Image (cartoon, rainbow, N blue to C red):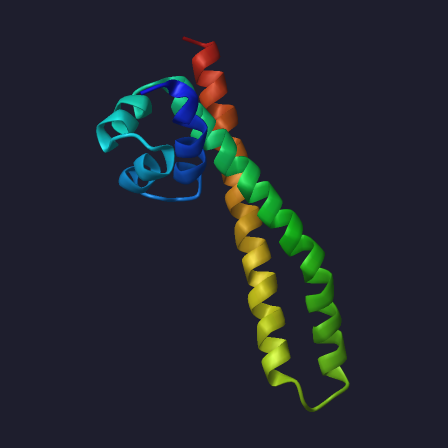
Length: 119
C-alpha cells in the first residue's frame, strides 16, 4: 500500500477512532496502521491534527458561549427557561473543559519538544 492513505488514518485517529476504524478509512490493513504508529512523524501528525481539531472545537464553543451567557442573563429576569439555563450551563462547562484539554495538549507538546531538543 502507498503512504498516500496516511492522511485519512491520521484524521481518523485524531478523531478518536480505533486503529481498525482508521485502517478502514485509509483503505489499509490494521497491521499497516500499527506499523505507521511506530513512526514518530506519523504519531506527531496525529497529535497535531487532534490539537487542530480541539482548537476548532474550542473556537466554536467560545463563539456559542456568548449566546449561552445571554441565555443565563435573560433567565435572571424570567421565571421560565429552566431547560435553556441547563443547556447554557452544559455549553459553558464544555467550553471550559475543552479549553483545559487544549491547554494540557499544548503543554505536553512543549514538554515533548523540549525533551527532543535535549536528546
